[in-house]
Image 1 (tube, rainbow, N blue to C red):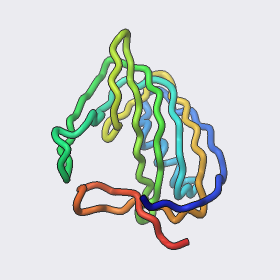
Image 2 (image 1 turned 90 degrees about the vertical axis):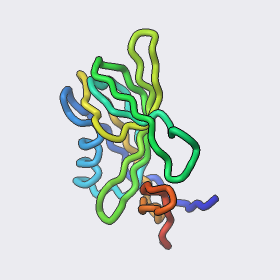
Image 3 (image 1 turned 180 degrees about the horizontal axis):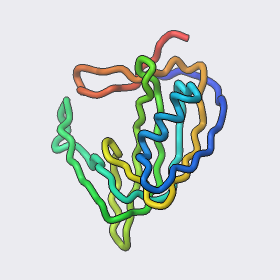
Length: 147
């Protein structure tokens, strides 16, 4: 395990509105406010989303299993936000429910808000944590730079 220590910085409370792209709006806020690292929570609803629900097999690099919905579902989620060369990289896992059906996964593409999504971002400072591309996994993975 690798880790670093940091401090809690600012806290942002945001309302992402009907029709907005949840992921893109969180990224915009991070760029505007110069948030380099953080953790965030989401509660609300999504009209459309594309999520990864696991790998086809446990191999590297993973081949994702995709699920999409466009029927309006409740969401509760938690995510991380780290910088990659000036660009925020989000990793958001959530549970998405409609009626008695719930699916859990990682939002990667489409994430259109239905009605509202409330987002709380807690900034982390002094960690040296960034996301960098890792050849073996084929993904942007958490790394630590000297602070």
